[in-house]
Image (cartoon, rainbow, N blue to C red; front, side):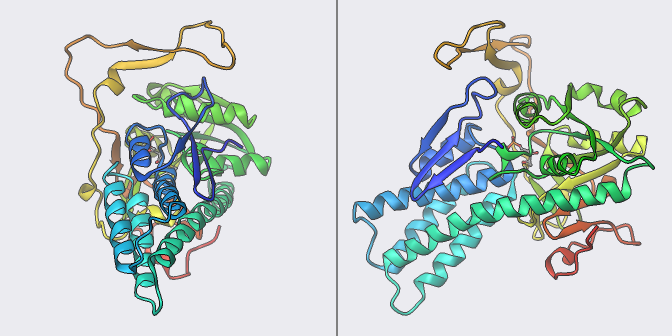
Length: 385
Ligand SMILES: CSC[C@@H](O)[C@@H](O)C(=O)COP(=O)(O)O
């Protein structure tokens, strides 16, 4: 399995996703500012991965301060230092809630520690670093559970009488978008490991091609039977009995309390198509992506990305040889110079189009009132497939 994030006691490295699938190169992240830039520039992306890298970037900076004996003695000063860095990190990308959620949770850990009798600056910093490291392990564990619950749900509800399934996914939600295994791609991985995946389809995911560059790379790497389509081919694929797509499974950047889901632009179109074709439409995400403070999808801030990400495309010249494992990536313009560009990074899929939300504690479906009741995910009564 690919590993997007490597961390060991203050040493953080991320796989530079801007160079994938052509060059597999890890880059060091030493400070919160390095982390902020890597997230903003999409060297790391995907809701869970963004949160983990942000927290570990700050942990790395604090490690370096600790080695240089520069942690303030006062617990309150250490708390303020960490709070300011967290506030800054949260400004890197607005839509995925996992980052804000991680900052809030670790901020609370730090505040609690700073209030303990005998607390010092170093004990506050140590509490933060421990929390950040635990987050990475928890995410991997959650993803494996999501994969299991999603695969079980699909086999129970979407086989249409067959013994195996074909699944379409969008964007990248795999090892590269998380600490490992993946969310929606984790469900596909789990179906594959249970020997019930007939075929996976991944959409190109314009404009930034996370599907063709990253998901396709992971599927090839992990030898999962898969086919790439352009986003515009999804309707034809769903209408094709030979493909026999049973379910569409996507990730999420933020799920509102009513189930409306912000995810990569193009997700909403797929949900509409799924409804028309009678194909199950599922969202796979850890509970850290569910934002109960946001009641409806229209409250979610949608990030606008630069025009250059739509009108330019980057890759090696066709047939260019790799030299010492390196290839030169070239940028090519693929649109008429001067055209206006609208480039929202995400869209909102209404809850009405979603059949189930797959989390690490189970799959929530709409009740008889036609509404999602997210409280079951947090009060220990989530339905198991
Ligand atoms: C497991 S990640 C789920 C989503 O974050 C993913 O589908 C997505 O939309 C990623 O967007 P990106 O802009 O590449 O960060």
